[in-house]
Amino acid sequence: MEDIDEIDLTILRILQKDAKKTTKEIAQLLNLTASPIYERIRRLEKKGFIQKYVAILDKKLINRSVTTICQVSMRYHNEAFIQKFEEQIQNLEEVQECYHMAGQVDFILKINTPSLEAYHDFVKYKLSTIENIGVLNSTFVLKDIKHTSAFYI
Amino acid sequence: MEDIDEIDLTILRILQKDAKKTTKEIAQLLNLTASPIYERIRRLEKKGFIQKYVAILDKKLINRSVTTICQVSMRYHNEAFIQKFEEQIQNLEEVQECYHMAGQVDFILKINTPSLEAYHDFVKYKLSTIENIGVLNSTFVLKDIKHTSAFYI
DNA sequence: CGTGAAACTACAGAGTC
DNA sequence: GACTCTGTAGTTTCACG
Image (cartoon, rainbow over all chains, first blue to last red; front, side, top):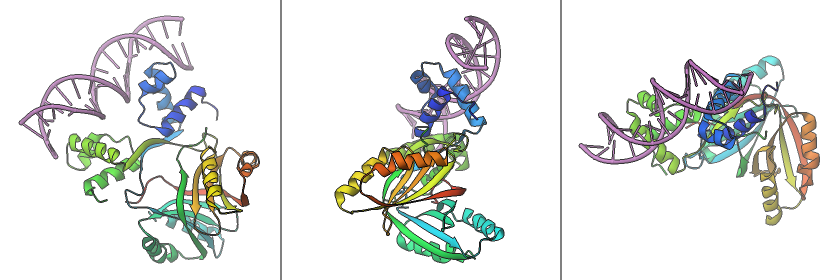
């Protein structure tokens, strides 16, 4: 596991926050030249520490302001139904996050839509058509307090 | 609002999934040259549609495997307490997401830690030291079904 | 939106300690 | 094994048409 050192960690911390930083800029912060930084990043990508690089969009500007947390409980808990549910969730593109949970609630979903009506339609025509859903409890986000893709490392 | 066209949307869709795509590659997909793509991206950054570019890390490899959803209800709901809570959450670096909700539960938090013990310590020494917290309900993620920073646009 | 040129970066050696 | 240095290919950036 720990085949990364402090320099690698620093690189990861930087790229988590700003992937546009050049190897040169990172090198200066670490008192190194660009080459070792370049090679370390290559290695971190190859080993899978860095999965990908993405652009983060402003959800209000792209008209996906309404964020909803939806808690789902299944009627029956056999393997086949759970498997099927997970597959179907993958295909619902409004769903940004979905976690299989350990408590009474089976799944927690985070969904982004342009409006409350759009969420209503999503539930009516997409989510609730999945069989074996028992309880379905939606609550709306009033305010985004904090939201980052970066880990504290 | 809609001062972006289909070409801009396509650019956003691409960069949301892979920010390393070059202007040249995007241009080829759209049957254009690199210049207009470059200018459009610049504009999308300037107008705020694109907030930033980040590297996405593998949480297992960096030893942040345990994801917990924590639902918090406040004891008193006056403005000052809510404000204070929101500020303090900003400083808790284990907290990756925090939303102010519309239901019985006031806040939903997503927290990443190396282990269950680390989560326990987080609650004991950090989260629960915030005053005015009433109910605090933690459930653990068994499996990450889906998880993306991209919006369906 | 296209062309073309300048500046910079990424990338791939060769060599040092 | 990890670094520095150097050179080249490719990209970004930005004139101008």
